[in-house]
Length: 306
Image (cartoon, rainbow, N blue to C red; front, side, top):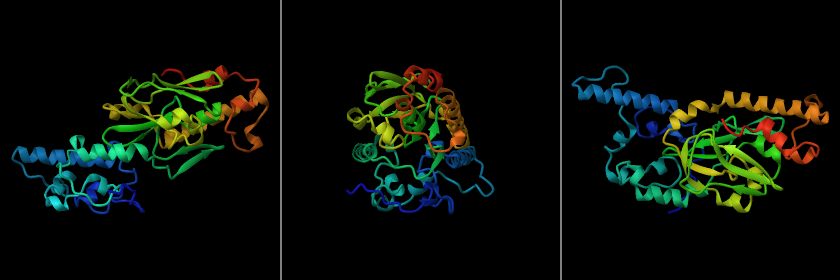
């Protein structure tokens, strides 16, 4: 089977593809876990089921809403689409496991052969004097990020601010697969010329994948921090609660803008560089400030435990 991306335009939401609702598009890359619409629809469907179980008939416009999986289960097996086809990852394949993806052999095959080897590039960035921040990513005050994947999985790494602050890393120290990480506590360490900086985990979770490419090429973290330079994939059973302590959209932009302003204040104090002078931040602040210690940059800008 050719596992290739098929979606060329904004795809329909799964609820629309199943025929439960009309004209609803997905703008979250099918990250249903963090989708408000998904949560609202699930609550409505649960309420309808509860009413029916108690002998009542649901009323109003929402009376006919059922879970999208239940609607699709009414189709013949040959016409019942696999969720990865609905998401535009593969050509048509029918679902033979009643949408119980957790114990589906193809689901495991898909993740082994496609998901962990293909990182979708962010399509929209905000710029803060050269520091980039992509849309759709959750940000932690420790300058780490997550991007929600499927089935309670998240991809994580460091942001562009941290990469520019320390310049090209030459070594990575990460725990083994299966290690439990705690939100706000040290998750991994990056190094340059014998200097170390630790980064905290943005969520609670168990490591299910470590990016093997950064072990042999740590500079990927600097070159492509939000896609090929990711560090872990985690399974997060408490993701809903963990997200409450992360920043998203406007709050992420505010935090990044504040971080850049603090850095400019620091640069003005250390080297007489003013934000009003214009220009963008270089990709190696540490390397261009020989009189500033690595430890000072860590202390001022990278919290070591939250």
